[in-house]
Image 1: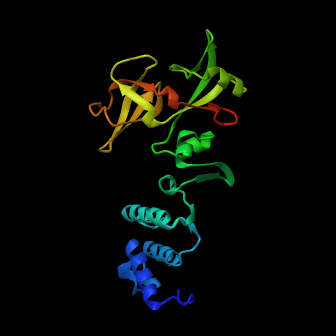
Image 2: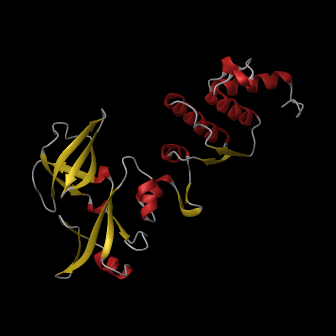
Image 3: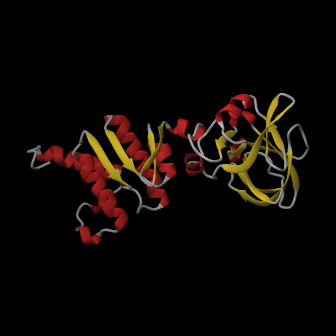
Length: 262
């Protein structure tokens, strides 16, 4: 800022504002060697912010921060972007950072660009099995299945049960072999104590109570499955239950190409 011949009082004002935003006001008089890794990251971020560049290039800028500071800094970055409209190219391995900060997300896999889209597009309509498994916590459930035509209706059969698909004919035309991979996200699984149409019997193996929701680790036909529910707080380990899938949220992937076909 001095090189740009900015007024001293303006420099002090900008430094004070940015340092307060990033929680480093008390560090301004310290030498670099006196700072921790997380503090150095925030100082580097502040040095970039005071310059008000047209574009930010950030490579995991929050990786050394603890969970509380990371959440705070993430919110400040989002506010910075909304306030100044500055383009930010942000590299991260943290899917939460990508989903919460990004207007558009580019997912790379060994140098290959797998998909580009909004957070909603990436989550709701992954183009392939890699993207589906990479985004989401708990991760998406993947089940091997087979497409079968029965009395003019296309169903997907996966050993322990089957589901009728409204777009089944189109699926049969898109896949070269009947073997597919079915994906269903944990929050799109309903758990009940009583059987209903297309319900699958399961046994509760582990319950993770998280306050607003519970994560249920289920065993279905000797295979693990994860469900998330904001209800069902009276279910216990070892209890037999019935699960059903939201048929509008089922993802079907070609087993060979691993591309989504529905």
